[in-house]
Image (cartoon, rainbow over all chains, first blue to last red; front, side, top):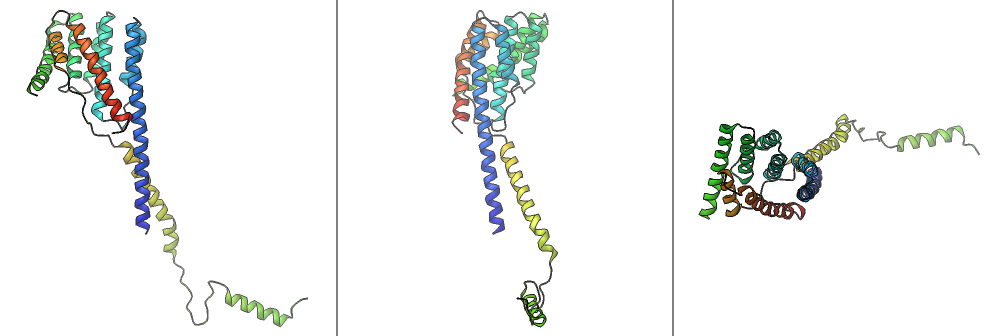
Length: 155
Length: 116
């Protein structure tokens, strides 16, 4: 009898925990979607500082446990790529390089986000006059993208 | 009206004999068991610990990834062109990435806002 009651209590607590997780994931999704749209809107108006603020918020927002690690990583890497692009547009290659490196530090994989960050890194290094390293970054982007294109063409 | 002392003593004796916990005639006294007192707080404490552990486990376990949309060939070609430094490659990449981003956020919205 006691064991059955304990089991029911544990199951209720697990259900409550899942509810909390789901709510956190929903809130995170709403926040990242809003921040992404806002960044695009203010950037289109030429407000680079406003876009930078929205993207920094997007890149640094903590990912709740209810969200898959890969999903959180993709959103954050894309935000770092957009920040790097924005800094390049704003003639600030050092900041662009730093944002690209922060994005790559989240974990390079064979995906579009990693390829984009290598590209932005290469462009920043090229603007800084570090041509050899820039070339290496472009090469890394090519390797990832060619592999992805090969997979896409096979399907 | 007061009872006579003999009567009062007889009533008191009967009351004491009938009191719970008092050994009855022909029946051994119930032994005091300290283990029962311990169980009275050990069981709720164990239940609270198990419940807290279950709650923590449910909250902290990372959800498995169900994957993001595959990139379009146009996006991959724009990335290749950008890596090779092709003309207007940046603009094409921006456009294709914008379209991919929309699909990605739509997938995430479907996955987490409406439940998995």
